[in-house]
Length: 327
Ligand code: UT7
Image (cartoon, rainbow, N blue to C red; front, side, top):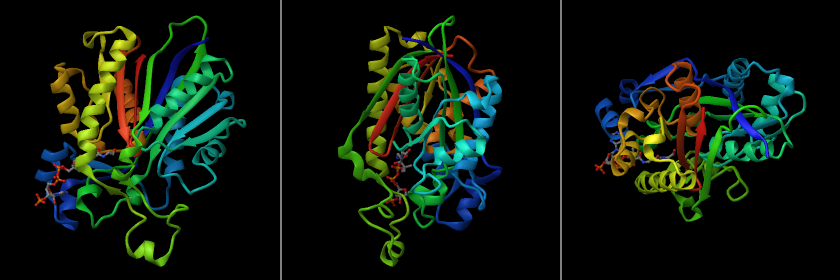
């Protein structure tokens, strides 16, 4: 089995920044409510003439540059997304073309916000066996295309962005992937849905009238699930690796709600200093949330070579995934 290394990271967020104050002018909400209930202060919105593949391409370009590899050597491209450009072809095929890749295996992975970490896990299996050699894994979402601006309980949470990572096999370096953890609790599928536009409810005047092409969420149920599953994953991954909380240099949680992160940190009693937060600036960017946070922290020099990073995420499905990596 091959060792795997993290060769490079990249991220991209659109220029347009939307503040809580602005949202307060278009709906019945307030900066105070959003900040205290979620920790979010601003988020980035995609330009009207762009789509998810455009976000993914920018993040990928940065990752390719930082990894110092040739794009044509990438033989596996996985994009975690639930806001694909269209139902088909996959966004990965479109991104592959826009980047000028050389016919890699390319596919989208739909696991809600867990898409990127699921993708990390899938790509690891391909590299470990030597079947693929250089993987580009992207988390990209333009969720604001699907948020209902008449539903204040969901639309204030989300922003658009992409994050990317390059993994390669390496014979002469320590293995970077120390642990992978994934699962699904399908009984919670009803808590976060975009009901229409698929085979169950094809688009019709009625689906449009009933706002069925927007995201619907039971925030309270997801909140409880998120705290419980984050603690569960951290505990299991530490058990599996034999690492202690003190061995972890950085915790990267899904950037959904500051109160979810803080509840998990409090129950597990570790220092908040080790937690990397980006949700105040970017909001919940779905599948981009983890790779965006990793790439920003790496760019800022906060995550350094050799550091041990633990990440956990949850999302529509309800999916969940975690990993411990050596940077
Ligand atoms: O990656 C996807 C995963 N999704 C999530 O992680 C979501 C997890 N859940 C959450 O983050 C929280 O449940 C929310 C932020 C969505 C909601 O916070 P909450 O503390 O659970 O609020 P709530 O739904 O219980 O609502 C409390 C009150 C309600 O008013 P009443 O009925 O008490 O009068 C809501 O109508 O807050 C009201 N409210 C708002 N008020 C001002 C809901 N949204 C807003 C808003 N501005 N934007």
